[in-house]
Image (tube, rainbow, N blue to C red; front, side, top):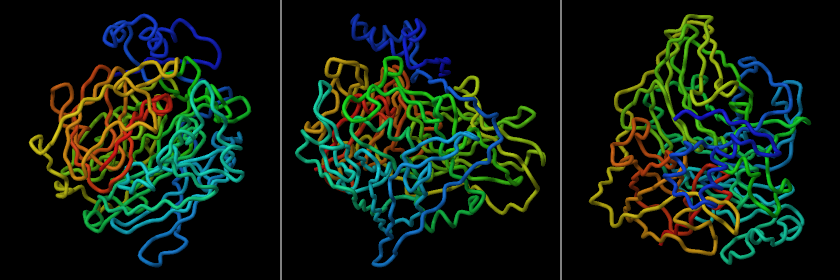
Length: 539
């Protein structure tokens, strides 16, 4: 679905905005319209766009940065140990403009961690930011005490009361009404067994009610898991393997990152200004923290490991040559690792938090030409993502084998011990607009779903508007979309699935790994902060 170009500023609402999804929330709540009736009046979009207040650079001028790989501080005892300090820093994201950031280790994105399958990793996070944080390894098969539950806070120096705010009309400060919260001061060790298929994971802040602005300010980084079987496939590697963290941001007049928080201090009142209730969209597309970058490539195959780390923006990617030809995007992996066999796309939809592992062959493009990665859902400046400049002919011994993996789970409907239904819809939360699962906003003290360790279940997920739904701990397979077969980009093992407006998606999974309290939620980060999470207990 193509998104209309909705632009908004921090003050006031135009009629166009009211009739967009932000207004649709009010219409549903105030007039009692059913979801289907509201959608019939106005197709859903994923949010409203903030316009930057500084001059923006031309596209394809800034070189693509590649995040540095973090070195472990020790590898003794069979565990790789890392240290990351969460701290404020400044960077020149737009040329000539200094932007304050919240960072992992002083950079945005944070440093990349590279691991081997089955070799545990412990990361000691030190919080030197002015507010509490929580770290979640998205896609990790992680014990509950290291999964980054939203109330398991790491406080900065000074303790709980000085930094979490006070109870308000919009609910208590974090952890105050969660007897199971585990709160530490200054540091916390997160241990990841990484007993899972090789794939691209990412880590980000997950603090209750304020995940969206924390990620927007810079708290996101990559974590790659590898194994010998994948290494032996002969896929493009080394400098021909590129991680691409795609995000969108907007910039204030002082060069800072603009974000429409109801409470810019991020202490008490969660949520965003009315026009942005459906999600915050930026007007600058960043890849690895650079605006519309360009990367010099050989005329050869490249492996692009794509993450949509945007809060709310959806992309539909295509690779287009100077003369208008579309190059194939050969998908070899999904959120949770390699596919059984490659799937070829010309257009690739990518929802927030989804990862796609694709191979692009630049050998057919003339030396000196450019291949643009374009977002078909964007308009104006947000239509461009990045570009590749084909610099030279080169030897290419890489390949994309017809069989990529043989260890994908083969769950069948007959294996499922139960089928559950979940509705992801707009509603009311504490007297205000919110986003709900099954009619309820998130409550850390409530038990929502209990599943048995090792049990297989089928879940039916129903949406009113776009909702990228993420399950912690487990991967799943997409069984159907509104009674029809999955789409080509649904292949493989996923942990995030994009629900389209009015759509019902069936997924199947096995709840194995670890017991404890986990989450499932919408990964539109604004929806998540405004109630669209639920508790998942593995017992």
